[in-house]
Structures are given as C-alpha cells and as structure tokens.
Length: 210
Ligand code: URA
Image (cartoon, rainbow, N blue to C red):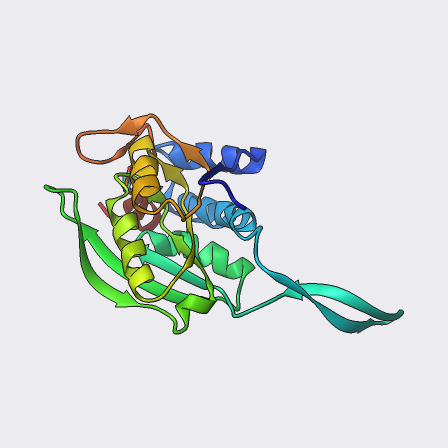
C-alpha cells in the first residue's frame, strides 16, 4: 500500500525539478522537463496496479507472463495545469481513459469554483489518478476528489510535482484514503496561496501566459 505521502527522491526527478524551478528556464524547456518528470512520477504512482497472468508464446516457447489486470485506469486532469502532467503520464499509459475537472481558484477566497466536469464511465472499477502539478492550499484537489467520489471512484491516487505542507495536511484531512505522490514538499504557502520557494505559476510557465 502506498503511504499517504510519497516523495520521489530519485536523482533524475530532483535534478529536473531544480531546472524547472529556475526562473530563467524557458517555456519550451519547462514543458519538456515536465513531460520527462511526469514519466518518472507515473512510474511511482502506478506501483500498485493489479496484475494477472497470461499464457503467451515467445519465439522460444510458452510461458505464463504478468500483465495488467482489470479495467483501464482513469487519469483525471485538473485544468489547466494538470494537462502538463497528463501528457507525460499518457505517454507511459496510452490506453488510460481520461477525464477533466475544471476548477478555477477565486483569487480572493482561494476557494475552488467548478466550471467543467467530464470523466470516463465505471469509475468505481478503475484506479483513478488525479493529476495537478501544484498541491498548494489543497482546496481544488480536495474538491476535485469530492466530485470524483460522488461519481463513484473509490480507488484514487493524487499525483503532483510540488506540494505545500498546508496542501498535504488539507488532503490528509479531507481524503485520508488518497495517497499523494510528489517530487517535493516545499516550505510554505505565501499570502496569495503560492508555494514558496516553488516554481511560480505552473500553468503560466508551461503555456507562456502571464
Ligand atoms: N498554483 C501554481 O501554479 N503555483 C503555486 O505556487 C500554487 C498554485
């Protein structure tokens, strides 16, 4: 069973994260690094996918070989920054079903407001991996997971790049059954709800907006 919080300390992950944090890293490099790092994080978050055996024939003979079991997993991106993580994870798991939750953060209250929700059917039978690069206050993530549970999901993991202690705590209280996988937990949130030292606004950095 994955712990409530897994920090992926692999040297490649940590190295790429440092490059992403640097403020003069270009949009193109940021996007490429996010893609690379998401492959490595996807490896960790899928550790417990159920397996079965299948009879196959190699050129040398027959064998019982391990293969993924059950329904295809569902990846759910919290728009819009989640899409940056989603692309890399989908590269590793191309058969996954994909859902989107649109929540924007009211900059005054820092509370999530829903504007879009579209997810694959039969969520109750799938492992669901929710992706959002920044676990800041945890309000959007907790709200997205509330919606997914209402839609039937019972086996959920949360994948992010960076987390704030406040977000980890909020998720632990709201959804203690949902393991979090991240590359780092930073020092704190600032008064605007940004992670410090963090990497700034992940969506702006990956799409070159401001
Ligand atoms: N969202 C971001 O993109 N960055 C933060 O630091 C916090 C929330």
